[in-house]
Length: 57
Image 1 (spheres, rainbow, N blue to C red):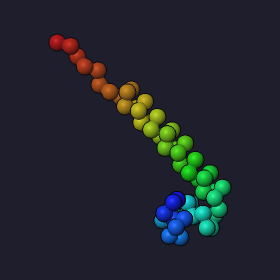
Image 2 (image 1 turned 90 degrees about the horizontal axis):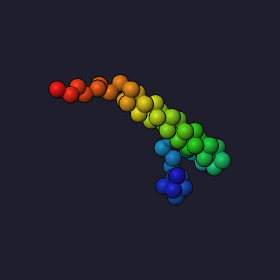
Image 3 (image 1 turned 180 degrees about the vertical axis):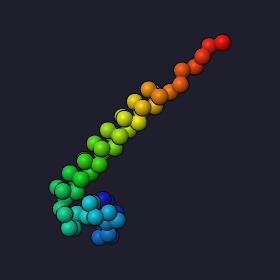
Image 4 (image 1 turned 30 degrees about the horizontal axis):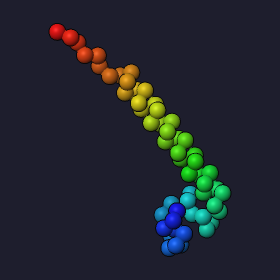
């Protein structure tokens, strides 16, 4: 966001403040954050659930 502000180039259209505005860019960032956290939670839960139990000999 900072680099785009000074260079005028935003590599992703969903972050382009010049076209969609600051409010929509922040909403898009928050949506990506929430979805990423949700996906990480699912992967952590799956990893704990599918982890093989160690057998003690």
